[in-house]
Length: 117
Image (cartoon, rainbow, N blue to C red; front, side, top):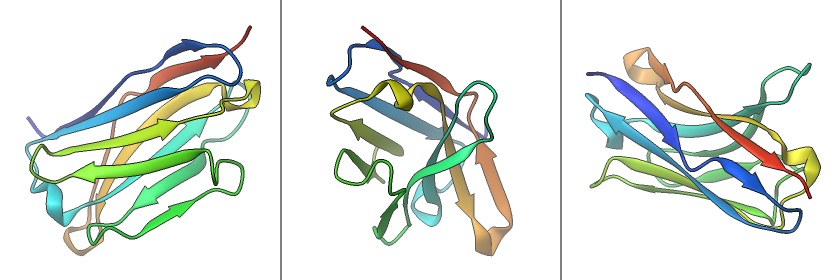
């Protein structure tokens, strides 16, 4: 089955950490860029972080220095390590795999992250 699926969300106190995972199946993962996006209630989906198939990374200013994106092409998985979490990080987090040369994009179903005391 061709898909990506997120896991690792949950409830965490401000200042805490969470690690999100994105598992890919049915694709040649090493050919795909991997991105994380989030959508808070009442807001548009926004870019969080990206790692290209070549390993280059980019981050939204709001998470720079707190979040780290990584990938394991052998396991076909991506991860988002989130530290120093803030209430404003509360959102549904989505994984996106995209191979622009293949004109193919996959979105996961999302995983809820809630930062609250």
